[in-house]
Length: 341
Ligand code: PLP
Ligand code: COI
Image 1 (cartoon, protein in one colour):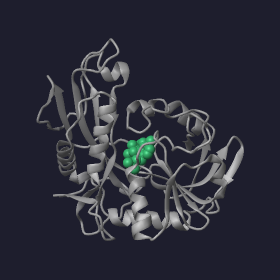
Image 2 (image 1 turned 45 degrees about the vertical axis):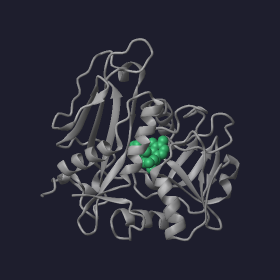
Image 3 (image 1 turned 120 degrees about the horizontal axis):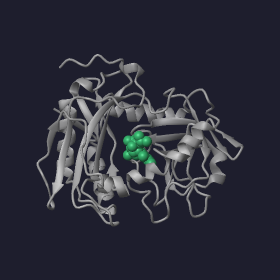
């Protein structure tokens, strides 16, 4: 199969339509078979549940070309399960795990020419999503739904790739206690748009959100979880019921312990202790691990000793190991890779 003529190494994180996407409809209480289509557009009622009350959730994962030329996804079963959790919380019908996995294989397989080559620095981002498509005017769940998955080749999420970023402590909250922060609901992202536009306008790359109840504990950013490294090399990651359970973060905790022999702590992290950490990074499918050089808390600068030029040594090791597994350079000890044949 011949790859598309794309300048892979200079891709940013933006949408490039590809040839095929997967669509399945839920009507009269059941999902249809679903299938691939070349049509990238959706026609729906002006009163669709997604348009009126934002009844939508999504997932994000990637396909990689390994060193030996296979096309693989990384732990897609965890994305399937997280979408089940999102659907339940949003009163949407669950899209069955097996169907989700088959849909991803079908879309990636049909767009194999868009999976960036090994070593190009790019990957194929996969975006499964679901939304209420039938009319809703009283506040209640829609009757009918659509599940779709498209793919798009992407480069680094943050411009500059592996260069450390600067983030600020946000005065806006992302998720309420007992709210929807732990699921991948579109509404969590809609409410973060004002905060991110404002952060960019003030020269910051991202927002660090605090727990909304006390504003003393670190939660996450708009699109990634945090990992910190202590001065004695321990990996620390925030625990909270209102942050998204990142698959990258959960994998990194295993990588740190089982591949690198590091101590790992998953616990509440206070804003007041950030100054004591040596390294900081953002982790997620899109972010991979993006190093953070500086956090600004209302004018007070917290500078990590790893600096603004390159990743700190522990974050670098985590990055190399995780991407080494994903690209097939290192042993996949836990069977995380799923090959698309
Ligand atoms: N946190 C938020 C708010 C996100 O949007 C994402 C991206 O999916 C993550 C964390 C990272 O999750 P994952 O590693 O599963 O991509
Ligand atoms: C992902 O990493 O898949 C996300 O959904 C994050 C988003 C900000 C692109």
